[in-house]
Length: 304
Image (tube, rainbow, N blue to C red):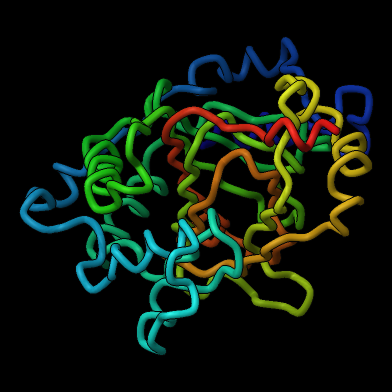
């Protein structure tokens, strides 16, 4: 920490880094201070087994959830047939392929995964802040592969066989956001069939201010068949004009809540809603994302 504090004192304000879109290149002075010894290093790594040796002895997912009802909602089979109790725990989306699940994780699981994401220094990625927002990322192929996370993917697959049929775990990441910023990830679509997005943030950290839902905006539009990844994930103005405007920006907007899951067709365009969180390391907005299967783009009719 002392090395980081010294280097941070050398970094100019964000508005002075416009040429690099907010990124800062370490200087010779920074290297002399020892930044190379600590930056992007796994300085502290703990495991679920160390934090909770008995975690394998209980279900990771909330046993009170009705996963049959959740799957029916996903496919649009019985979206209107929920009881009030079921609605409070599972259903809140008006369109198939988008499901909101409150209290997805068992409370013991939530606490364990949150502790892993707060303690481990496996956050090795940042993107240009002035272009994509201020957040850091951790990935399954770069340190974030604790057995409890892999078991979570397995349980999701087992509990929802209709949704997950043929869709194996493709990728997994977590993002942690700067509370002094209010915008997260821009409009994009992910190359997968099913996107499971879970908020792991600390209870009470979300300020819940008006006009700051802090969650996710999922649009009802998908990339056209002829579009490649570069087309639909870098040129957001083009996507807005060609797809979102004609649909009057139809979307499902889900407010942030700890232990809330938004599960949706990963080809649907989506973006982080504006957020306001308390300052302090443990108060940052955190989401855990698991991708399953391969993307299915829009139909050929949408090319016409």
